[in-house]
Length: 346
Image (cartoon, rainbow, N blue to C red; front, side, top):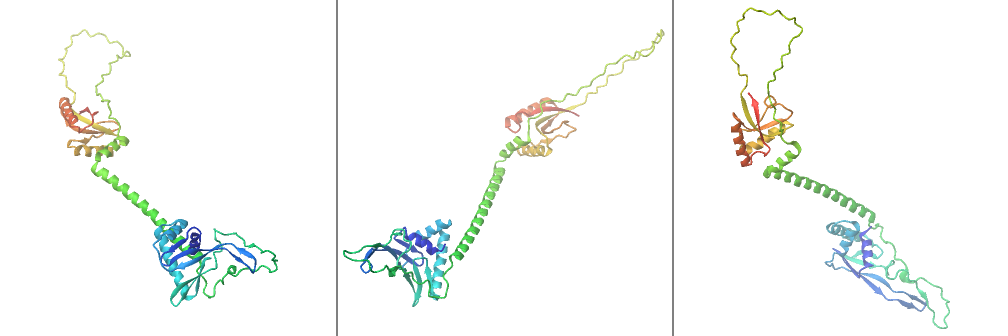
């Protein structure tokens, strides 16, 4: 739809409508009258008057913005472009301004010639003229269409009027392109803000990521302590052998051999946590060292057999020393409360 059509719609609602950069239009009422020659009464109607003096009023541009679903700034831009094209067209001929009239240029001045009346006036649309005869008067004169109802010539210039469809196509394409750019810009800003927020939490609150690792990668430490013991199989008497005759000769019984102590030495580890994946165990060692637990390390599968990688907070030669060190670390809040002592054979 041409912007002039929007102006025609607004004049059905307001007495005055201003177009930025052009001037303002006034809707004037013409009272009804009686034509004695035709014996007809014609109803009132409205006509348009143009004043080439701009006013600071956004009624027209806001109406166009609402109709086209665009911003007020875009509507003002389209109105400015529409006015410049109207002036250019009026220099070379005449510009039809919807059903309100036409513009042309006279001695470098923009002139508006209104139509005799607004044809689709919502205030008086559909009111027909009435035949009213005076007393003793006969309706001899046939009805003739009044002069003001005769439409003005469409155009006296060979230059065609501005095509509304072409303007609308330009407006819609430009508006949709700006909307797509705005949507992608908003998505990019949201992604950037989320990434910066995660980096800030990791930088200044590493404890939050510790809790996250505990939730997804950790489980409670193994509480079962492996017990190593030597089993001595009972000697089963061989009954298949034949009974040998008793030797009555005196035998020399050798002295008993010295008993060899086969017990190996032990060391004691303070197990702070355990993980199914070695990567989590290494990350836990990093956190412990950041808390000044400098002896933290990951035990190998040979040192601590099992399906999990165990993290040690310290190694001690005796169990008493390990227990005392564990109490100190617990009071300082550097290790978990469920930490325990694991003996390892050397």
